Amino acid sequence: MITQEQVLEALSHVEEPDLKKDLVTLNMIQDVAIDGKNVSFTVVLTTPACPLKELIANACRNAIIHMVDPEANVTVNMTARVTTRRESDQTSLAGVKNIIAVASGKGGVGKSTVAANLAVAMAQTGARVGLVDADIFGPSQPIMFGVEHERLFITERDGKQLMEPIEKYGVKLLSIGFLTDPSQAIVWRGPMASKALQQLFRDADWGELDYLFVDLPPGTSDIHLTLAATVPITGAVVVSTPQQVALADARKGISMFQMDSIHIPVLGLVENMAYFTPMELPENKYYIFGQGGCRRLADELQVPFLGEIPLVQGICYGGDAGQPIVLDHDHPASLAFLTVAGNVAQQIAIRNAAFTHQAANS
Image 1 (cartoon, helix red, strand yellow):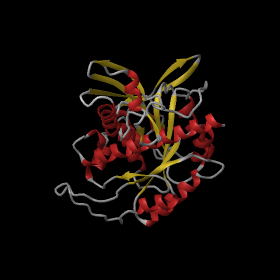
Image 2 (cartoon, rainbow, N blue to C red):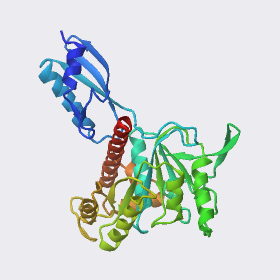
Image 3 (cartoon, rainbow, N blue to C red):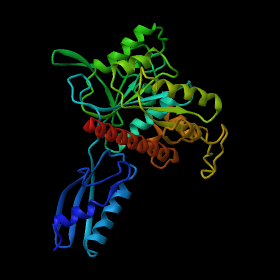
Image 4 (cartoon, rainbow, N blue to C red):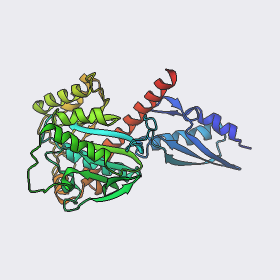
């Protein structure tokens, strides 16, 4: 007879690849059920976007077959409980587990496109996702989600009036673009822009979220300082293109997050427009802006390289049409964004685990 003790002993030899501890020690095994030769259990992942879920599932099956019974029929169910390093509080963002800043050293590198597609990609995995368009002077997310003509509703909760984010593609979205005339330029001094940003966080009903992405303006500005001082950021994703002029600004952006006064962990670097692939030759890659620039910078600065996004027409068309390309599962660019989203979720889980370990030992 197969016993639960045998199953757990076998699974104690399966290591979570990122956290470097076994699944049993990490309390990731639940609902063990045994019926003769049939063994089933649930593995609770740290994120539904885990890129290693198949690797973990296969390792679990092999452990039972090799260490318990070679004739066992093993069923591995996968679920997720997104981790957080935040302590519970009573702020308006108490239900948000992880806040991720998406930044770039300079404009024109596709930061907003990456932010939109990462948010939708995370939502497609089953995570609860929000997106704040913090680019106060050039909000673009309403267009990218096809909601530029939407207007916000106000709800009252605990005697306070709160904005209701607009939801599309499974993503809750707020942008200054919903509060201003899209045909008029926003000409505000720094304090006004900073106050507007704070309202997008504090005066909104975000509810329960696993990930809240923040599309920052390019460069380094009051907005970045306000965000660091106001919101408990889990980490930052920096977007760049491969050429040296963009990488020089990306380096400055990374150094800003690493300053003692800001001290936001850099989750990694994304290389956008990494190569050109013609529609009629989908296997061909032309590195028209140079090859491997972001990967080399990531290695030099010792930050994770999260992946590369190709330069293809579909990404531009999708953004203009309000349909992020990641929605088209048959498009190769969709897979690229899903891969980067999985790597972002992976880095968040690793950093949350390291923070929890440090807190336990302090």
